[in-house]
Image (cartoon, rainbow, N blue to C red; front, top):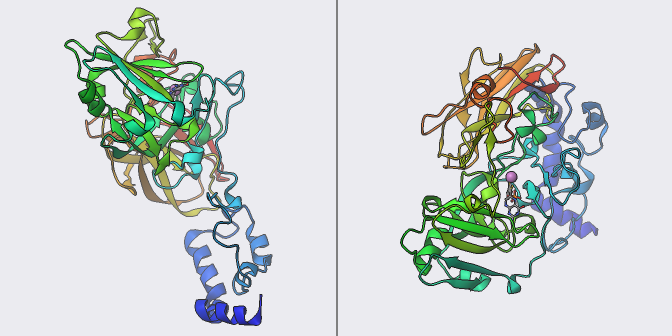
Length: 441
Ligand SMILES: Nc1nc2c(c(=O)[nH]1)N[C@H]1C(S)=C(S)[C@@H](COP(=O)(O)O)O[C@H]1N2
Ligand SMILES: [Mo]
């Protein structure tokens, strides 16, 4: 860098002034933070110990190396990526869960997500036959069956219909399902990570159904995917005419291949398996297809051996995301406990947090917008005195439904289920600050 560049830099950005004030205020300020937050000796987010931090030539009152030179220019990354220091934020699998990675599932790193939107690159993936690589020019959506005017739409034609955008969660009903008989996952990513929340853009299914015209008696729709599993699900007409969305975009860009590019169905608030990806066919009929034994469905095995079916809604649920096993506490002091709540029935109305395993509760406050059928973030200040704690959250939705304790849930459902486990979750904080997954009723 030329001297002229350097002068320009320091003029423009007031670097020399910064340098001065850093020298004056740097140490004093660091001590204040340490005292008020109890951060002495804490690990920083980057994993550096405070000793390494103190030895760094890049911290105040020094001027960091990256401040003394020009950075890389525009279009270094025509499609941007997260900082390399965020590489630990990624989807992960539980390898013993599935035999291979084709019919498998990966989990959202919930402990690292901020706000309520899941970045597209870390949305959990669930495939029954892997991700098909679909050329949108060769993909069409067929709507037929009990309709007056069957149609086959190209992607361009689909996008000419009026579209809408909505922020909605998507959860696999198997989320938490490995833990009906006891805690066994050692991370938040695996206890609750079959969950995401995106802004979805597409055409309401009701708009398309108006276009094709329903025949009398039409009451169910079969949605079929173009993947090797040609996965299909039967959707009742009430949902189709309510908020079911034919989605082509996610978080402001085209759907990711993992999420169903170029088009998927989204049934907001309903179990994820009904939201058929890589959607190629919608057939209108007068009864559910799995009663004709043509397609499968998910059911819940009850204590008496019978099975519940049509449990489409993902009931009200919540989990504390900080602290969690991936994000332990360090020294006693002030923390902001955070979590996520969601309900397939509507808005979250209220969330309480317990630090003593449900004996006493304190009301949390919402720290995000509260949107129906979306993740909702909550938080609460906590002054940790260093003694062991059992942290729980309990959410209530706007139907008045209260998230049950695990004991209450098991009393009704037994432990034979895989699906729909929405009981209150417990994190055990030990006096070292380590956090582990435990179950109490
Ligand atoms: N065509 C097709 N659609 C599918 C699946 C699939 O394997 N094939 N998996 C379903 C299941 S079980 C879930 S939980 C959701 C997951 O959506 P995601 O991968 O976008 O997170 O997609 C659903 N839609
Ligand atoms: Mo699923």
